[in-house]
Length: 531
Image 1 (cartoon, one colour):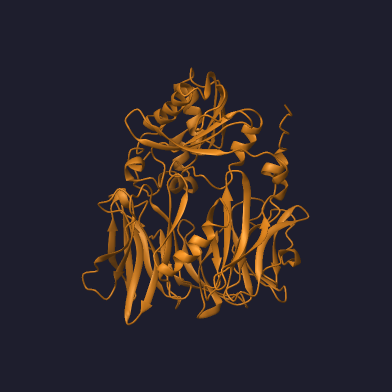
Image 2 (cartoon, rainbow, N blue to C red):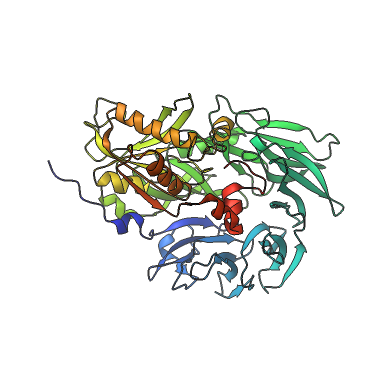
């Protein structure tokens, strides 16, 4: 039997060939990120169907560029820090002339664009942690001149803002003393309380879009109040009672709504996606079902819609699955035509990638733990659903957060790396993982190193009982919270794991939370008692 070639680490984990394409709002240009002299830069093509004709509009030689946004004229805004200091500044580039200006030249700050508007194509609202470095205030900047002015100083302090197409600051939210979240509406320059989300609902409830039509002003939002999972609602702001009106209540729901597709001009919701074992898109308007059904027939992977033209006729769609890197397409809704732009890592097509099995494991107290299993090449038993021909050494990979989650996509390169070298690999959405219902999320509160850790042990025991894993050949691996879990696993259950691989894990939570840069990331609000 021929041996399976080892996939080089550089191919699995190195820079992609091309990623993150975005169509310009007018449909005339395609922009994406690709290496230039082995450093990621932004490329632009004036033929959106031909990525090969693109030219670099940036010339970074050190750090690389990972995020950019189209404005509503012919400019791109991108963010970049210096040597990994995470003080991200914003730059504006004219894709026609190549002229570049800095929008946020302030040292020791972080900035990100919050709102572009077709009504003001050469302006942008930016959030910057300035003048108070502990909170983000809002600035209005001119993309042509770089002129920037403070329009909303964050004195509350608010955690987030929502701005309308008139570039008016309309809504803001902040955490409450009861560990929930308050949403405020700005009326006559005063902030009025609109909604209070309880603690259990605060992770799955958020405001999305403001709509002005037919004399009404609507706000679209998700909320999970009195429900296990969130639904999509709208509020008529002209209604004195501000009642919630249901827009979408998914049938047989097993996960939160994770993404919503909106019309670029009207901001009316068109479709939504759920992510239980895999990502599924569902129409809100019947005509969108034609597009979703067409896209489902194109590729066997899960898809996401990365960008849209302003008239909503052209979409950039990313298809991803367990055995290939991301493929990006330009989709024309008018003729139902689709054109492959590029594969993010075409060199992987020369290697054997293996299937990812979505499975559900029961915890000792009855919770459903959505998990993902990968087996080495040619070790799969064809007479079973997910089992190997014999037990294997196994690596348990623990996600960070812990309020993140593992999903079917994107391609799990760490799974492929280990499976290619002979290991079974298991990832588990333990209690505290986000997006799979309030019960799973809530039951992780204050269970770091306790019941959240028990879920991982239950998954290991399941793998042993199912003859997937060899009992004395199990490793645990993770970063961030996953790194903490590695340390907890080796400390509390040294008989379970033969080895642990920890990176960037907090070993002392008290010291970690005293660092203000880490505190919100670890515990959310100042009063959060989840840990």
